[in-house]
Image 1 (cartoon, rainbow, N blue to C red):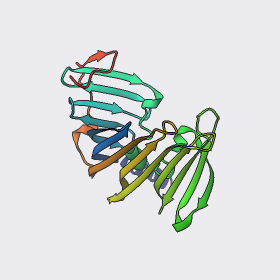
Image 2: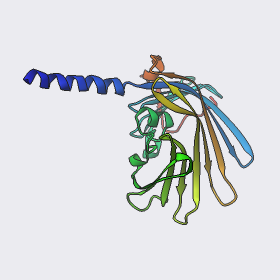
Image 3: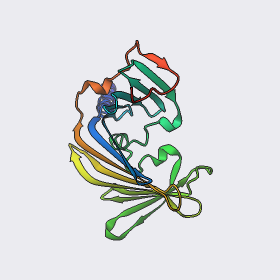
Image 4: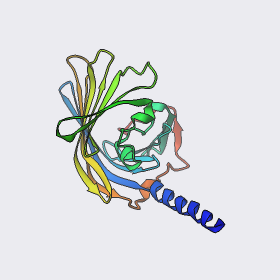
Amino acid sequence: MRRLRLLIPAFLIISVTAVAQRRVAADMEVKTVYDGKVTTVGSKVYCTSAGRLVQVFESPAKYYTITNPDGEFKMYMPGTNEVYSERREDFSDRDNLLYLFLSGRSDDMGLGLYGYKLSGTTREDGGLLKRTYVPSSPGKGVAKVELVLENYLPIYLAYYNAGGAVVSRTYFSSYEKFSNLMLPLRVTSVQYTSKKDSTIVRTIYSGVKLDGQDPMFEFKVPSDAKPVKNAPSRKK
């Protein structure tokens, strides 16, 4: 009987380890429309379910960024061998889409991680499920958040201020299945900066590879990189 009790923890450890090692790589294009101007930024992303995110940018100059859920951020410029490091809560990648889906947080899109609690669930037309969240403590500047799911996959997310106005909307679409992981390959966000102005951000993922062994997942800044106090210019 004692031997059986020893086998069960070993099995659980193996299972947890296998889950913790999940990773996804993809090409990402982010197009932003604001004040009549359009900017497009492309990168390759390498994300693990533990929350480590590496991004590789090629234009206008090659550089790397590394972030994690604790808000640790590094930006490395190989052309000048400079590295900028900082740690701030808003640098955390806990709300990164790939991380949320890999870590199994797509059911609330990470709202629980940021101090929101579920206040209600309703069924909408067409079998949609709407969940309403409110801040656990006041002072967030957001009165409530609505998350709509279809077949338990998020398709819409909206933030409301205290006056009941929507301050941002996000739409998740073009879902595809990779092994047993469903991912939305198109994300469109609208940020209402004022009553007349808004910023539209469209993110497209392509070339998705699940649980690969690309060495970029383990990328580290060279030990001889020169630390700098300000973020290096991306035009170098």
